[in-house]
Length: 440
Ligand SMILES: [Zn+2]
Image (tube, rainbow, N blue to C red; front, side):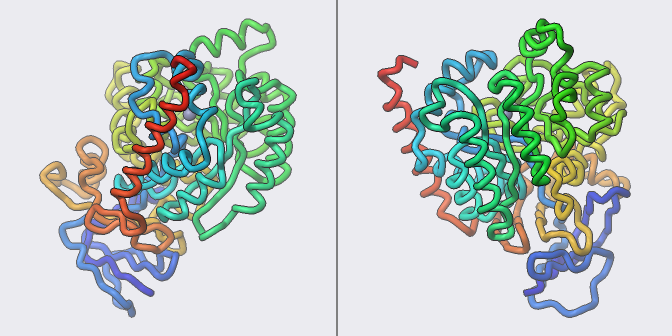
């Protein structure tokens, strides 16, 4: 099946920021077969995309999809209270069915906002992956590993958990053309150093991405530095943690030396400006990371700390906070902000087949309506400025993932949206009832 999107403004998000006006995109099976000014070959279906903008699907580089069930439950508290008092007591009573319901809600929310790929870290990974497959969205599943007495009954020891995660990766990698896998050691404060060494070593040997939370809060930075063995990044470098692909979420409280370690080892960052702001954690040094050519993607984090999964807000907030931090409007220009949500996000997740509209890439494509927020246009690059500073999920009309038309006219075609919302509502209330005796 060949679908031609004809006569659109085509924003490729490639390294040269190429824009075709008007432009055509041909989707052939699961691949992009043509991108350019005017396609004259054969096709099966033609969609008149005049008055619309076509671009690659957005990439959410860090989230915990089932935390949609906790949306609004942890507002106005810091990370420690959020985790220890609000979230962890609920997480240990989640059933696989709850997790599926929360993950499906997240997948629907993301798909409708134009996200076609997300990096997920959570537990009950079979349910996470199945929900993503059922909704028809691409995901990088990096099942979480942590050591905590509260979790031991569910996850077992970290060694047992690692075995299960590695077998999940073997079983699920490539399923439906949509599931990608990696390993998710939660954080240096929830795992002993020997576990971090072993987990990273096993992942590196298999070429799997390691996805971890690093130095999210000042408290975390201070507690590590107080051990007198160096910063978190220095300690991790010393145990070989960075000797393979690593995606470091947050990285708010890193210093010059840490940034050099990231640059030296190709550590990518999932920058989550809204979650960091909501928890009062701080502002990551985005402009400095980019100046050192560290690959940075954008993440929403979980819905409990955002509180939505709308990556357009991160696209706008990331450059705004960089400007405020520097007291200078020039760091992180609009093209860079959009790249972090597309091409750079794909690079951060080590998924080179997505993130741009180029021939041969996977057909993860979104079609936006051009409304009054995209007027006036002065030059082709004005489209990029508008997408970053005045665009948003309200523009998203159609979405293709792996060549499949999964959102049409703003509605998901793969699942019953109302049923997904109702199931999540039931699950969230059931979890609250289960912990009533816990007193949280
Ligand atoms: Zn997170």
